[in-house]
Image (cartoon, rainbow, N blue to C red; front, top):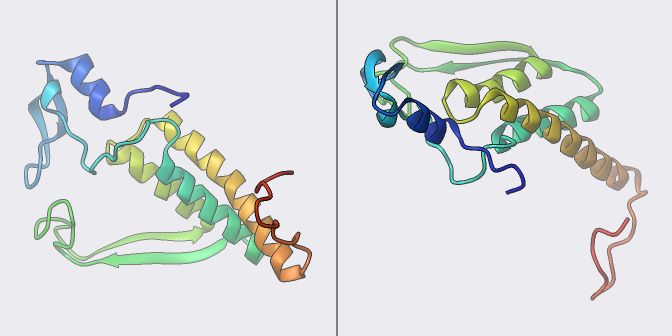
Length: 168
């Protein structure tokens, strides 16, 4: 709650009120120009947590960073096939044809696309996505270091019963 910033859902409705905006019009309507700002909604559902930083972008950054560290490579080579009409937001309507997401040749490309989905879906602003990614990378580094210690046998012993956890 340190960063009390509104999400796009709140900001757009407040700033544009009864003025027309160009936006997604809802399932099956595509982009429209006659929706009122106070009727705007994001393409993706918005969870009830703060705008900044983006938790989803943090997950993307943490996974990508831990994977880079663990494999010693940024290589990925991933693409995802999505069947016509398989959308959870607009089932039966989108995508209009079988679609391939990606390809993402690197974890970095995937990480950027993963975070950008929150921006394009109307869930977060760019600064929240960037901050989330950066936070996630630090978490990914810590997760890798934790795992590496356990693999190498250098992990500290678990705390004794009643001993504070997370010291040091």
